[in-house]
Length: 95
Image 1 (cartoon, rainbow, N blue to C red):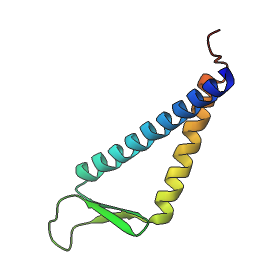
Image 2: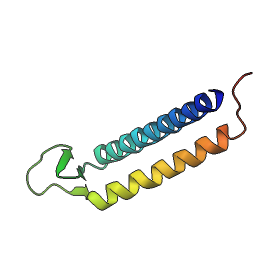
Image 3: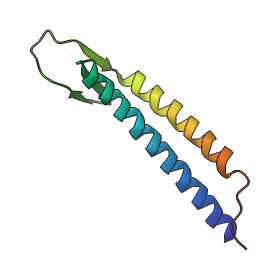
C-alpha cells in the first residue's frame, strides 16, 4: 500500500508541475502579446482562440498552430516530469 501511495503522490506532483509550467507559459505568451500589441492565436484540435485587441484586419498577428501547441505541451510536460523526478527522486514516504 505504501508503494501505491508513493507512486500516486509522485504522479500527482508531476501533473501539478506540468499544469503550473503550462499556465506560466501561456501567461508569458499573453503578456508579450499585450506588450508588443500583437494578436495571439492558439489552435488546439478543431478549435482556436484569438487573444488581443481587434484593431481591424491589418493588426499584426502571431498564430501558434496545432503542431506548435502539441510540441510545446510535450516539451513542457517532459521538462516538468524531469524536474519532479530530480526534486523528489530521493523522497520516501514516512514510515
